[in-house]
Image (cartoon, rainbow, N blue to C red):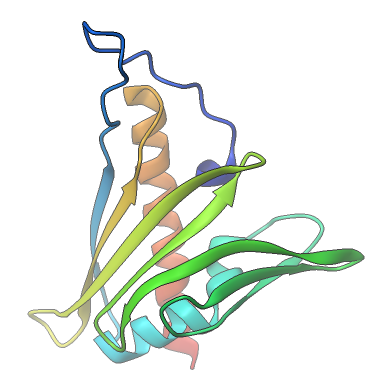
Length: 158
């Protein structure tokens, strides 16, 4: 996802004793018009299609769908590279994974899928640690909303 992968300035959130406080997380909640199981399956199976949308060179991600599984990026004309790792997975309900951005910086995303009120699904997404300004956080949440809409479109097409 473009905003999540961009370099973000580090917030100056030092405590009085000189140690850094833990940065807050970013959260998004979205109602999808596809079933929970379709949304979950598309989240992992098509991660590169909805997350890496518009990236050049065209990239794709392969996810080993088990705790400790690798997430590897495959880009046309470029060797594959480690992109992240699956930390926890509860098929159809929850996945927690890391990803690298801006070189060696890393973040963790937790996506929780629930049955929605109108036959669709809801997804709660937590992105941590968060480093950046409030404006950066708003941009990231907007990028997540756009990315999850792409996820919904891909899941609907299956």
